[in-house]
Image (tube, rainbow, N blue to C red; front, top):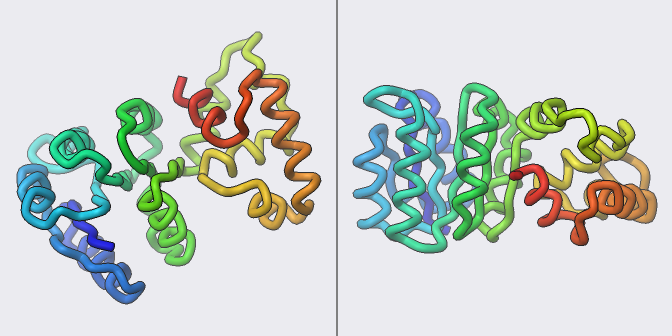
Length: 208
């Protein structure tokens, strides 16, 4: 798998390069500016871009905008966006764009190498991964009367893990409840939120 990295923090950028190469990925380019990201995607034809949401010159959302433009130019490009802050609006923009695997993680997850690499692989395979803190913020912002307010604590855990891209069997293992119980909880969540599919519909619900 070919990957390009866009991160202005030199220490984190080099750390990502070392981590990804040690895991067997090909890092085709590592840049620190959105314009250089677009050039790298055009030159290297990567499978995935790992991009800091905030890049020069204004450090607002240049990285995310450049990543979405890169996907427009290279349809199907998977994007894993990284942020130092919980910014669910940016996550929503990434999900709404569609067109390929998408992930939005806090930078602190990079320090948990196995967790980060697992998320990266799921995004590269076309899946969607949201940081659990972003999901928690979205759930907490629901208004009275929204069906999400009827979810139990366990069901909210299941929602968060579904949004992180985990399968129902994986959720059963992570929560220590087994596959059958996880499937029942996921089914209850789907019924309460009135969505037919457990994972992708859940992401559609959170995206809305």
